[in-house]
Image (cartoon, rainbow, N blue to C red; front, side, top):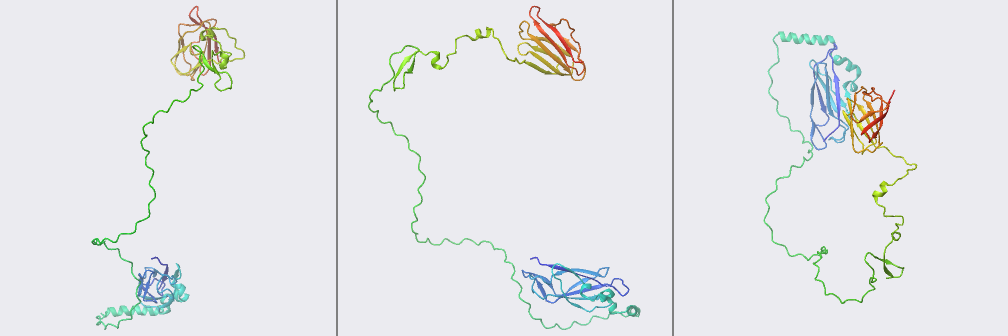
Length: 378
């Protein structure tokens, strides 16, 4: 279980301001510190060695975390055991919340700044070191270890720890034998009605009923090709008749054949005839079709061009108009045998990036395309 911790730090110096060596002993005022689940998080005293700078830093359970047992009045006592002296213990140290406390915050500022100088002067320290060296040169040393003293009386029992976590469930044992059958229970309520079953097969047809009286029926008489027509709004007032075109809303219809209509002369007034234009992008040979088009345009011509003799069946004086433009490079133009210039010169090349028009008519008498107009963009 998580609990709050604080950090305790401190630094100890010799009288000559160099780092001291040794260790710091930290003792809580309770024998044990337990977390909320009864786990031991600190037991007895804690020894922390000073580093090369004479400093230490240790993370301890916060003294005001109510989840820690004992829940209140927790404090720490700190005693510095240096290699050449031992400083008096500092008691009543608290670590509230997640704070960091330095020993200089809980001891007299002058005492911390002077380090162990509060207990040994520099001269006394030097004298003590010289005495230790002298004793070592005389061959003195640590005496033999004395016998172990008698075991002291057992201290009082500590408080009972929190109950440990429940262990995992054991494996299921074998199934016991089936017990005797119990008495029959009361009959339950009737369940809801089930869904409707499928429809059964259709039964056989019944006997035909007697013939009813004759109805008014359809009017008698009439001749082949006639139709039945209602003469008035009166029921059953009908009779046979030969239809006229006015009877079916076709008063303006006559029986002129399509062939007759197509050959008849017609005058178009305020009508526009849209030309059928064949569009081609760059081709080596272009063949115009008289039956499908009235004009042609050839764009982005990227090679020499041959205008072949058109296909289809032209009528006398049927017009032809061809527009040509290259792709930025002048291209040669050749013509089929039916193209004939009259009053103009057939161009043999395009002018780069310029539009060229050729216009003419079909001469049915000579089977030639008489080119009578050439237009070259300046």
